[in-house]
Image: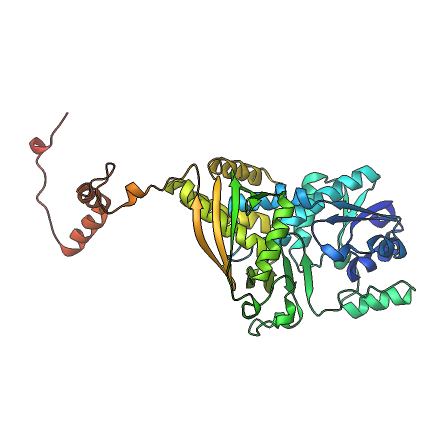
Amino acid sequence: MNDKKHVKKVVLAYSGGLDTSVIVPWLRENYNCEVVCYCADVGQGEELDNLEERAIKSGASKLIVEDLREEFASNYLFKLLKSGAIYERKYLLGTSAARPLIAKRQVEVAEQEGADAVAHGCTGKGNDQVRFELAFTALNPSLKVIAPWREWNIRSREDAQEYLRSRGLPVPEKNPSLYSRDRNLWHISHEGGPLEDCNRPPEEDVYMLSVSPEKAPDKAEEISIDFEKGCPVALNGKAMSPATLIAALNELGGKHAIGRVDLVENRLVGMKSRGLYETPGGTILYVAHKELESITLDRETLHYKDTVSQKYAEMVYFGQWFTPLREALDAFFDSTQQNVTGTIKIKLYKGNTIITGRTSPYNLYREEFATFGHSPVYDHSDAAGFIRLFGLSSKVKAMMEMGVHLPPVKAEEIQRD
């Protein structure tokens, strides 16, 4: 049985770029269905200009655009921030965190529109196809999922352009770049083209959100960020909404060359991939948040949280957002953030983030305890017994290797209660 005959209406995750411009007429031709385009504004900026006109001209029945920037910041990016999750030591998960939100709203729109299918423009080699489809499965498994890149014969940008021209459809003129990019409130990524040679340094014109350290101001700029329970709430003493604060930090960070990453990462599908990421505001927030945790979290919680953060980063990267484990880990992270309240001062200078101040009403650091002088809570002589016990296993091992034998202890020498 041909499933294509049973699709009446599909909701497509639409960007207005070349791929999704081709997908609209391709869906109509191959599935004989109505196509509703859905676009989530998660901070793409000017990429959303004239989007409705492009969608309708390509054959869509309508375009639905939603501003999700504040929800993205509050319910996704700030969860990342509180977790401290970083994938493979460098990647702050900008694209990975946006996909579950987009997929969630796409499913909800499909339900509202009475659609029986959802579609995306992800390639068959990338991570995003997994992120979208795991979300679709978790939220509404009854919806058919259409992934054109796994079905059609289009293999290049030139093929896609020819497909549109042959049907008298407009060809998007935007993004003639050699690079594949994804932009949102948190970051912009750059992949493909010359970057596929991991031994080749990136050209400076690749970057869009940040200047090079050489072109950054010669004078440092100091800022302060206020946090409440792990979430940033104010910049330089001025209260801001989550999305507004991130946008403001993007401007500051980009100006001072903050947040550039050149990474060869392990994709979920099994291959390595090289990409450039610019995350100016996110980098500043991660640095500030970690510094605040350094004075408000006890040692055991801080160390264990670092371990759990790695698992969380992997889950987000792999598209496992809508899972019981991710929700459980969020509950753990929320618990650790109850006292992560205070202010961090940072100096921005030519790609560097330099901490200049840390304050919190829950500060666990006490100068009178840390001093090398006399302290009422610490007696230097106590360290001798602690060290002997802490190193006892190492001592026993060394004695055995050296052939040192101690006389057996007689029963009557053992003290009993």
